[in-house]
Structure formats: C-alpha cells, structure tokens
Length: 239
Length: 122
Image 1 (tube, rainbow over the protein chains, first blue to last red):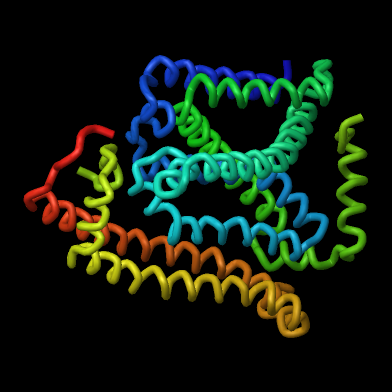
Image 2 (cartoon, chains in turn red, blue; image 1 turned 60 degrees about the horizontal axis):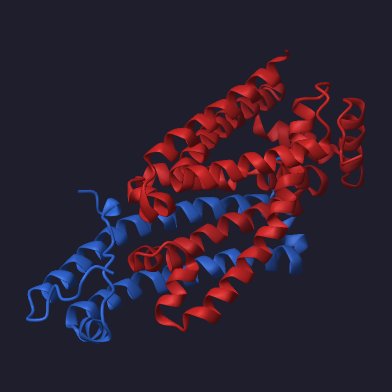
C-alpha cells in the first residue's frame, strides 16, 4: 500500500472517530446545532478557516491562478473580503439572537412560513452549485490519491458525499467543527511545506519566483499545466 | 468567563420587552457606540476593496507598474487587502469586547427594573 493510501485511510479513520465521539456526547438541539456553544473563538476561527480551505478554494483557486494569473488571484481576494463583511454586519446580531440558522433569525421577527421557505430555497440553490464544485474536486483528488486501487471517479464522488453526510448527520456541529480544525491544521502545515519547497527552488528569494512566473507567456500557462498533468497521468475530468 | 462563550438567552421576550429595552438610554447608547465603529470601518473596507477591481479594470496600465522586480502594483494592492482585512478584524475584536460590556449594562439595568426577568423559558 502506498503512503498516500495510508494517509487517506488514517484521515478518514480519525475524522470518523471524531464523529463517533461527538455523536455520543451530543444531546439536544443546542449540542447538535451549536456544539453546546462550548467552542471557543480560536477553535471556531480555525474551523471557519478549514471550511474556507476546501476543495473549491484550495484546489480551484490555485488552478485559477496557474491558468489565469492575476485574475485568479483577484478571485481569491473576493472570498476573503466576504468574511470581513460577515464579521462586521452579520456575526454579532446572529449570535445575539440565540438562534441556530439564518432562517431562524429572520423568522423570529417576520412571518415565519414565507421567510423559512425563501431561506431554504436560497440555501439549497447556493449549496447545490457549491457542492457540485466541491464534489468534483474531492472526487478528482481521491481518484488521483488512490490511483491504481480500482476506485473510479464516480465511486470517489459518491464515497466522499456519503462521508460528508455521516460527519454532519451523526456528529452535528461538534464533529464538523473538529473535523474542520483537524483539516485546517493539516492544510496549513502542508501549505507551509509547499511554500518552503517552492521558495527553496528559487533560492529563498521571492522576487526570483515572481520573475520565473512572469517569464511564462500568459497564453501558454494553462497549456503547460495541462501537458504536465497529462504526462503525470492525472485524469483531469470524469471519463 | 470569556464573553464569547456566554450562552445567549433562550427565553423569548414579549413585544413589551422589545419596546422597553429599545427605548432605554443604555440601549440607544450601545447602538450609537456600535455605529461609530462599524459604519466607518465597513465603508472604508468596501471602498478599499472595490478600488481593486475598478483600478484593475479601468487603469490597467497604472496597475501593471512594476514596483519590485516583476511584482506589479496590482499584486501588491491585492495582497494588501488581506493585511487590511486582518487589521479591521483585529480592531473589531477590540471594539466588540467593549460592545459586550455595554450589552451587559443594558441587561443589568433592565433586570433591576420592575418587570425584569419576566417570561418563562422559550
């Protein structure tokens, strides 16, 4: 068994262990939806960061930058800005309302039925499109990680989807928060390793790195990436 | 106790509670204090962010000025968005602990009133 398969199995086992632990502890609505309100600000911060560093942003934005250069970078700034808007305008009123969801808060002061219907509709619309991107990247990643183990792309997408549902349905907010914290630390440490390796390649001089990137003609950047991935035997989409 | 861990009240106040607290000078003071920080912070931040796509779109020559090596003004400006975001989050952290203190004051004043602590569990 290769190292990547072992790491993958270890991660799935750890996160399922967290879910089992959380499911045993979780009693009642506050415990399920808000982790008993026992998550500290720092823990929650790392969980939110782990949430943001998902397949769509972590793989998608890196891909966008490599294909589109600055335009891809501009896209990543927008995602970050949204968090500051939430922090300044939404987070505190939401917490003070003592409810669980955005729909709860709106229904508290307005007519509940139409408000909840619209909240559900907008949530489902966003989640559907968001999840498609997440599932494709998760499926492609698992497929790449476990290449040669006979797991097809379609099986990977379904398997990842089932895992996500197990985390949320059985573990509630406590499990999802801790899974995200673990994920945030893993991704942050991997990022540090990758950054150090890339900088080492350019003699620990960030200007050399930018100079090398700017020497790649813009219209060729995407083509180079696709060719390299093709040479490495990476499947780029479902086939 | 850490204020961020405080359990929000789960009892459902009546309309009279809303109106009484909303009219109290403590609550008006809290709202004014919050506005003094949040409105300018948000306006500054949204303008600072929108400058980035607007300048990149309408002043591409200016934004492709090379500042250090091959690093352009656009890259430095985009990177500075993260720094400004962190600074505003840090300022909010400082300000919000002050807001929590005023919230406690409002609740304390209200509960010491004649109708204080009315209403059952929600």
